[in-house]
Length: 337
Image (cartoon, rainbow, N blue to C red; front, top):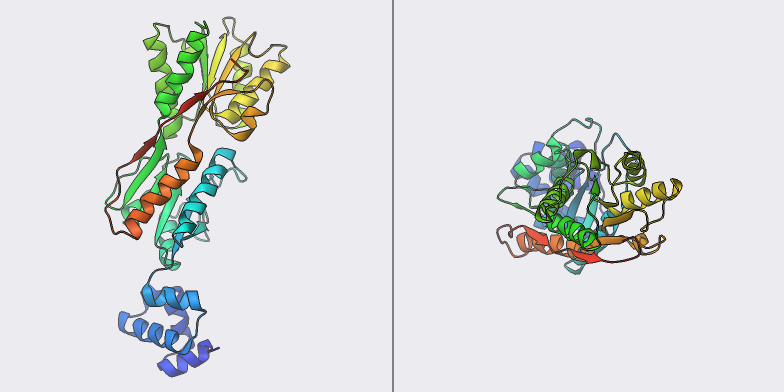
């Protein structure tokens, strides 16, 4: 197999110049760069896939921006994991692979160009964005750079970007209507983080459904959580400490709902006899925890597939970004109500 020194010798340039062509191509003139790339393919300097990538300027790789927030390492969520499986499967059918991009690099987490630079460095065909709701400037810079992008639960706009989400407000309204039908009139909520689009939309749907039912909204019955177990546990403890605690709680995420039910059990309350709980997501464990969590189901497989199909339409078919997709939600009734 040819070596970098051989490629440099036959190209009439230094080894350093050849290295720049493959690592920082923007600093090498287009004429020199193309001459070295053509010769690299000719003499077989790179393995098959890399050589093909350089020759065609297509990597068949898609960057995954999964901003889990560098300030809280180890964040994970089963709902996102299931989406990723569906996304990877749908992309692989079309010969595309996923490359996870670091949340920050040596330039630091405040570097607004870090994702743009990573996409260019790896010659990625496009990107899928899962943001933590922080509206990270680096994510917005990626959209502005006109990289073909599909965002999940993040409203983005641009000539090469679209997004996929669920009917979050409608799903929250389904949960409230179900509780009203069960006879509840004092309904509280553990909301998702309000800087996230799903968190804000689910609270909007909760408020709208209460108004539709002619029920008052007590601001003291609205506690903001963080989509995770401990957040749901802490929020439910606050609700249970109220003199006029709610008889039912809509929780804007299943992990929080499971934490909330644990808090109710610790307080000596029975779910649903003393307090009813409805979640959102329908993660696998929702069916396993006693007494079984009533929840609003999102189409997790459909989420990943829709994101992949939108990106493929842009990459393979050369289409403009498809219109944003809002997937329907359904209520799954179990024992917690």
